[in-house]
Length: 384
Image (cartoon, rainbow, N blue to C red; front, side, top):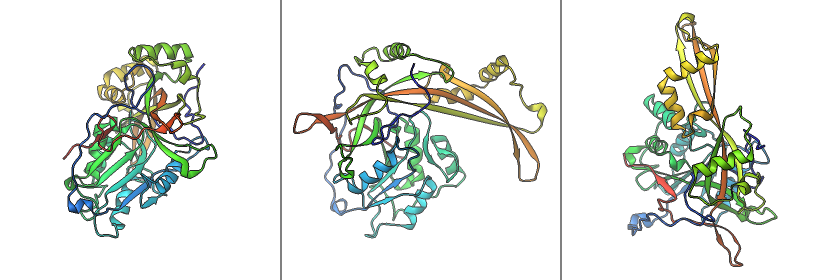
């Protein structure tokens, strides 16, 4: 029986979720879909500052994503940035930092990396404000409407600035990229970039030398489970076969490997996708009755917006466990409002196959490095 609800990650590797790509046989580096090569102007040839924000802390020795990313963007010969900032957890703090710390050369930033946990289905662990809501297209839209996010001015970011979001295949969430571009100052023409694939960092050397950390992209396939179910390996194999009928993949190999022993291992990890809904009422008589299975099901059927919220997660509705909670809110005039909090949770298993290329000895363990503008790998915010 496969375990549920826990992220299994190698101590040297952080895992997040990613898109499911089609294709048969062993995974191979995907072809370049579209790469735009342009000759830089004289102004563009001048160096621009770069900065990386590590927006979280690792909570387990088996989940070293932030630690590895911190080392990588400090030491990598190809992707290190001039500054690596830790201790921040929200987008609001990032925007304030950028405004207070403009590049010393007087030119806007060229690259801003944002490293955060999350998932492509709903949102990111990075919050909009410290201690507030996680970052999603919806929470960003609301924060911008309320004026809670102040974009940096054009001396800090401009049309040549790229905000690279390193998360969980969030390139599959176009609405999130577009809202982030607005948060960074859409009028300045800032571009937000994110991978459509899974991303993680891993040691290439067995002695875990920080200078050996490499940045990997990976193909991912998904299976789903209801949190109350007891699914077996055979159940997952059948589900994966139905979901990906054209992919010839050794599903059992990935299902049986919970931890990577090397950066090339085909492995899996599990996580849960949450969807939440809140309603507030003026009096107890207005509160709906949800004290039986039938009444709870009727509530779900009558709330199309809630069902659409689950649908946006891309997880089939039958895999969600829906729970109802009554809440009491104290409002500004010392009065009390009653609320109904609804939480839907679905389980997801990610099977992950890194994209690698052979090294000089013929071993396929070096990371595949896509072209910077490869739209088969990356997604970009749309011009506002």
